[in-house]
Length: 171
Image (spheres, one colour):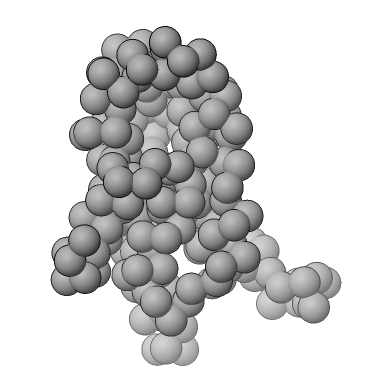
């Protein structure tokens, strides 16, 4: 992948999901491609089990949402060594996460993986069943549907990171 293409948030998210799969980790890695100064391999690893609505169950919320919120929380959330949260960073992270949820609701009508599949692919899939997994792929799951969801999540999170970083610098 060409690095100039990957610096554009939507394209980075789209290309990572299309090539590597694993929506949560692809959202995290795409955001780290756009904002390399914030790369944290532990956050990337922590997103491992969140793809496909958590554990490929398709029952939880979208992994792209999870990964994007993980990076937003990494950058703006409460820290372990300040768990008393006198600066209210936890509330700050909640607000940013809620903005991501709002984007998903407006765009997809839901935050849940299976419901997004219903909307984009016409039905839900059992990703643990080999035949259904193949049907998922044949329906365009990884070209173009899931990559577009990851691309949008990365775009929205990038806009929030830029906005909040600017506001922090202005304060």
